[in-house]
Length: 215
Image: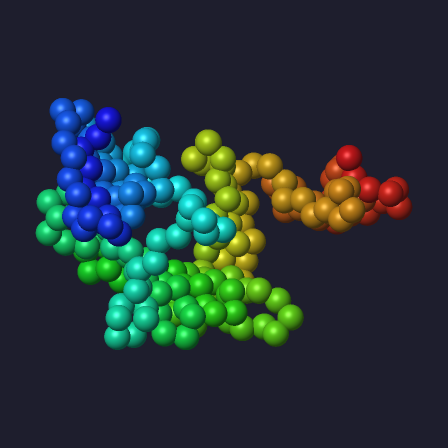
C-alpha cells in the first residue's frame, strides 16, 4: 500500500494514508509520480530503482523536455557537491546546435551543430556538404588539434596533430607505423625510419617487394 494524493475527476482531491513510507501522486486515480521510502522518484513506474526513473507510458519513448518558455531552448546543468556553482552543462542553442561546457566558468568545450558536425575547441566546426566532420581547434594561434591513441602502457601512444608548424602523424613507441588496405598491410615505416612497401624487411632507407602485401 501507499499514501496517495489523488486528483479525482469525481471527488476532487482525495487522500489516503498508511505507514508504508511510500508517497504516490495520482491523477484521475492513476499513479503519476511515486516517491518510495528510500526517496527514489518514479514517473511511469511505482518501483523506481534509482533516484530518478522515467518509464515509457503511452508515448513511443520516455521523454524529459527541458525548455525555456521564452526561447524554447533548454539544458541540463551539473553543479558541485555544495550546490553553489555549475561544473558542466549540456545546452541547446538557437539554430539546433548543442553545446557542452565544463569548468567553474562553464566554458564551451564541444559543439554539435545542426548539420551533425562536431567541433572541439571551436563553436564553428567545418561544414562539408557530402560528409560529417570533426574539427579540433587549439587554444592559441600556434597550437592545433591533437588526436591521441594510447594503450594501457602510457609510454606507448600515437598521435595525429596539426599546428602552425604543419600536419603530422606521430608514433611514440618503438613499433612501426603501418598502412593497410583491404585488410592487408601494404606499407610501413619502421622505428629506424626505413620505408618498406610490400615487405617487412629493411634493406636500406627504402625497400619494396612485388608480393601481394606485407605480413
